[in-house]
Image 1 (cartoon, helix red, strand yellow):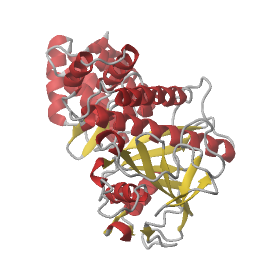
Image 2: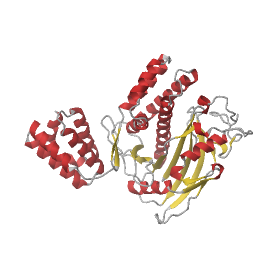
Image 3: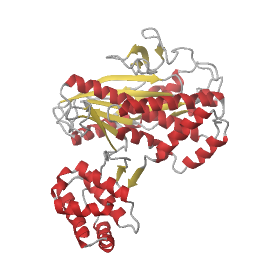
Image 4: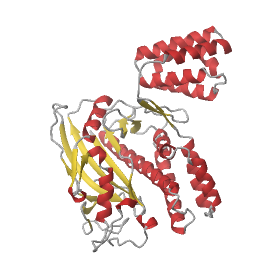
Amino acid sequence: MLFGIYHPFTDLRDIKAPGIARLDRPDWPNPIPGWDHLRGIGPIRLRPKDGFDGWVGENVLAIGGSAFALRLPRHAAPFPNVRFRLIRKAGYFDGLLNGRIEVLIGVEGLPPGRRAALRVVDYLLGIPVRVPTVGIETRLGGLTEAAARVWANATMMHLPGGDARADLVHGGRPLAVAESRGLPALPVSPSDPPDAAIEVVVPRGRAPVETVLIAPTAATQRARGFRRAGRYLRTYCQRLRQDIESLSLLLADETIDPGRDEVQHLLNEYTRRINRSRLHLENVQGRAAIEWSYAAFARIYPGKVDALRTRIVRRNLRPNVARKVLAMLDASETSKIIVYGDYREETIMGDKFENIQGSTIVNRSTLSNAMNEVRYRHDDEVAQALSEIAAYVETAENEGAAILMNSLAEEAAKEEPDKSKLRQLWDGIVAVLPGVTKLAGAVGAVAKLFA
């Protein structure tokens, strides 16, 4: 099983502090493997097992991570008979704004299953890390600020009175990835099924770090095919998420004029890369990961989308740039995240529901309100069908189905429920709990809600 912890950062120094004394080498995005060296990180090397030719920055990495002292034990008390192995610490930059520090860890002997993988993620995020060059001691899950500062110092000339302007290198939200054939197989369309698929979760624990689980599908036959598909998903998923978040940061900073030529160049380039990643993920049925990534803007800057639209329209942007940025803002609004107390539910637009975590209990008060409203608008048969289906969902102890059932009951309780949303929620319940279709009478009655 492979685990990756990614700490992204966005370097705005060339935009907000032009003329800063930066080092000429390495010359990203084309550093010279075997010749260039990134101070405090390590030498430039070709990415093991090859990268993605033509995809800026992904074929070369600064390998080593000497600035980060990671205390990773070979064995840990919470996981008897499990062996941990550090695969690599590395740094990367795309030559424009985006970079990351990544740590890849191999885990052997871990029992199969989703719960075991999430427990290891939580454990790894808590491993102590010391960063002496910037005087920080933290945990692996809290390395983002240190990663940004190390990058700022590593790319600056050491001049008397020089300032690396680390305040203009913004640490992004960390991401954890677990990739294993031991994870439960994920459902995919039978039409040209991929060898791996993605589930996104926000595990409870010491650090609410979003986690991508890369699992096999019914089409997975060979380990080699799964590894290739997993690396593909891992790369494009985290790149899409980071590019959208960095573009969001660039747009939301009111001190940056989007009409500047160099800013328009960045907007144009990142919207192009975002579209490229989206197409690559669509080719392997990665729609859920796309929606999750597009939700980043509205999640980080709630309520600012409309104001940004006005700002973009009023500025003298090139038409093609304005069109692509506005399209990205539209996509961010149709991909929303809903937060409920102790768990989060990603609302995936379309017919696919994934990455849902929380309680397996159906809210009785909400269900009662829904039954009363349905009884008034339809008949007692539909109300009883809701009750029967809710009881089946609770008995199945399926978290995703319980959350979707609660959402369906909330919508059904409204005076003017959205039929398309009811249909979407019901399809989601069937997708995560196919056994519910055995309740033929109840299923037929519930269909009246969105007929």
